[in-house]
Length: 186
Image 1 (cartoon, one colour):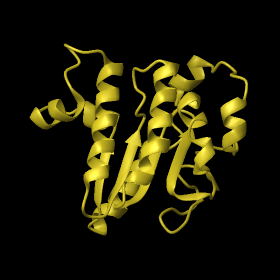
Image 2 (cartoon, helix red, strand yellow):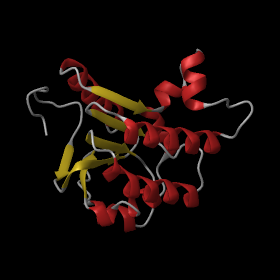
Image 3 (cartoon, helix red, strand yellow):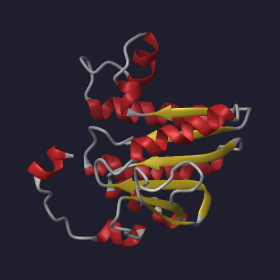
Image 4 (cartoon, helix red, strand yellow):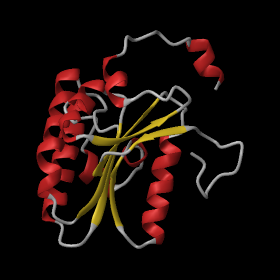
C-alpha cells in the first residue's frame, strides 16, 4: 500500500496480513520490491535512532574486516555454512542486547539446502521470544521451508507484488516455472 512515502504509481504493490506484531515475514517474486522495503525499514529505524542488526546479501558483498567477521570466508567455508554461522551469531547477539533493537534477516538461507532453511526457521521460532529488547524481527525470504517452520507463531506477512498470496497458500502452492527471458527484461 502506498502509505505516506509513495504517490501513484507506487514502485511496488503490497498486501499485508497482520498477526504477530514482533515477527514479520516478507515474501515476493524477484524484483517485487523486497530490497526497497528493507532499505525503507532501515531508514525509518535510523531516523528514529533505533539500532538495526541486519544480515543481508548487500552486507555480504561489502569488503573489509567487518564483513569477514560477520559473514565468514567464502573461500574457506561454504556459503550455506557461513549463512548458518551468521544467523546463529545474530540470534545470540539479539538475546544478549540490553537496548531496544530490530533484527532484519534478508534471505538468511542463502546457500542452504531446504533442510537447513527449515532448521533456520525452527531456530528463529524458538529464539525470537528470548530477545527481551527485540522491537521487531523481519525475515525476507524466498524459502517456503523456512517460512513453514514460522507458521505456528503466526507471523505478520507482507506479500510484495501483485499476486496478493496469503502466507499459507504461498507455502503450499505449486511451482510454475518463470519465463527467464521475461524476468531478464525487468
